[in-house]
Length: 308
Image 1: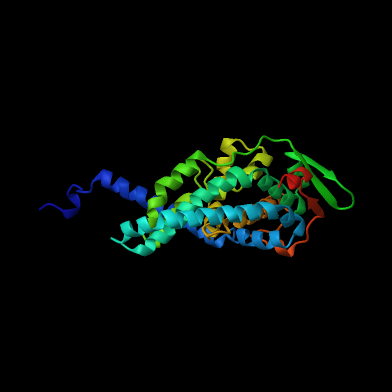
Image 2: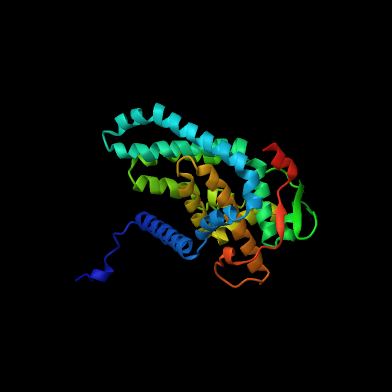
């Protein structure tokens, strides 16, 4: 009589391999999600809002740009809801008309982000990032990429940039936005996937939106492509959290331009904390930068302020 255990296995090696791969991806995603939630990096975009508006020397030069950005955002949203909302509602009536709202907002987000980064943010965002680093005591880091002068007392002036300009936007990001935009057709779940796909930390390219907020930090550190990818991989959960919260803020109609700058501030605060922890001058975990005193005062470049 044949023993049951002696029977040949009927399992398919290919099927087992697919299951193993799926399980590894699920476990990896779960670890990243856990790190994103428990790591506390998602707080930095929120702290960036408070920090920017509590520093008149930082917010004052940005007011003209913010005003222009709000007008552009308002014009884009009005145009899209006027020209595209009803046709999309008619199409989505087969499913649910509610899905047209996040779809139009997603379309507006793509257009506004493209216009803001191409024509409004640019060098101002770099200056803001550097200014926050200086306020957090990262003088040596900032001086790797630009001149910093003292205008008397504790006040420092951002000078000429010594590094090449950062890319204003990524073609890969624009293509990914357009390809994944139809996910918003699926109520709630589709929008959640849209946000996650845009702003996870992709170690193959290193620059989805989460890591993109640290493009200036990587430049100041002098990282090459492999070093950037390694840094992103080590803090994958943090970059996923940063990018996800940034996206949710940027989806808020009209005022998304404001949150582009506040998230830039939050990203700079995180970069300063990373540097402080690297030197052993900060305890582990996420520390609230709003409870720490600034290291002097910083003025944005006068030329940039006049150009605004």
